[in-house]
Image 1 (tube, rainbow, N blue to C red):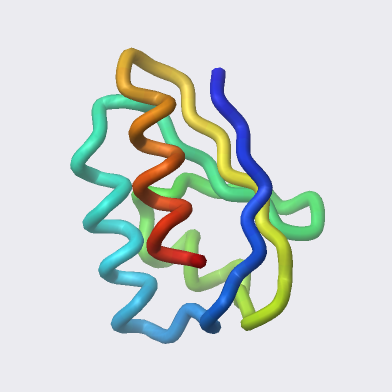
Image 2 (image 1 turned 90 degrees about the horizontal axis):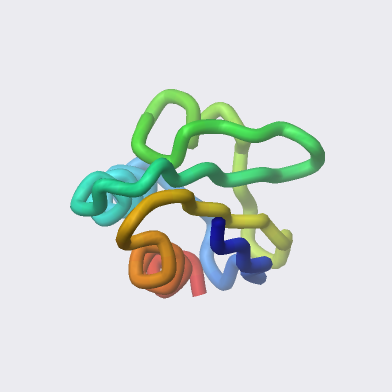
Length: 80
């Protein structure tokens, strides 16, 4: 399992959230995103939007699978 804390540089509006999900969906690994003790599937647009990720907050990304390291780094780049 790979984990990374990321400071969000830009609030996740619908467009950016959709791009985040598209990026996460490219990978075989299971990818989760956590904010304030709520953990959701990073490949689900509805789950991601439900977190209400705003600019300046810190989220925790985690991935488990064969491409976990690359997956976490790639989805983190969408947020930062």
